[in-house]
Image 1 (spheres, rainbow, N blue to C red):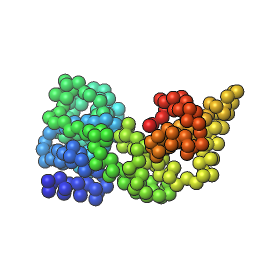
Image 2: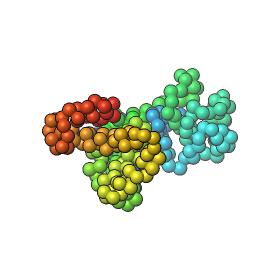
Image 3: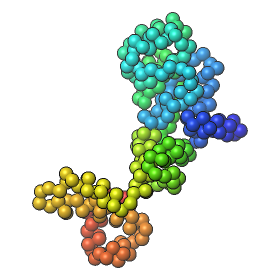
Image 4: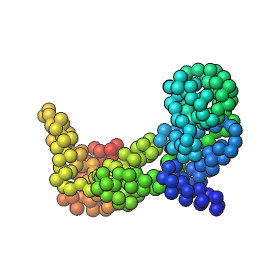
Length: 263
């Protein structure tokens, strides 16, 4: 327990690989342990889970080379003790790489977002470290949210940590989509009414055409107001009263937008 807390404090302080969840802390400890062991390791996980950041935070002076730059990899093997290769599945010649690794005695830290054939794993690696997706690392999401707010707060005009509790945070692409959604949420929360209207104008510039442009674009207003209204009032009857709509009209709209609504 004390070790986990100490590791977490160090990582947060260095602002590199942020870890609070048990799985991320374990991955950090395992990667740190590699520095004292003469073994090759594979770091796996979905895109945006922090694989390269994890490797770089532990092996800070080690060159990081994409697998597509095969000639550069072969050259670097004879100039360094360790090497980090990203997108390892893109290596063009595994046998040539293995021979070069054996000759140079260089330790390999490889990174991949895909499942490698068992034959390739057995050929190169002694251990594997897997980073779980952020949707399974809720404690780490808050740390990353705060990091992205610090980095981009001045740009979007705020550092409101309540944004980190938003249900609209996107974790589909892990840190990549999370960062974008944090920036978008920060930006939206600071917009004035006139600025929102200007955004609508920009969006509608190429949409106003044909014979039913008004009806075709009503969803831009209808869907958000129904989503917010149902979350706030819970009842279609109550929401209809607040909106000044006939209950049947509201029900028809809910049926019409059923697939797009988040209620």
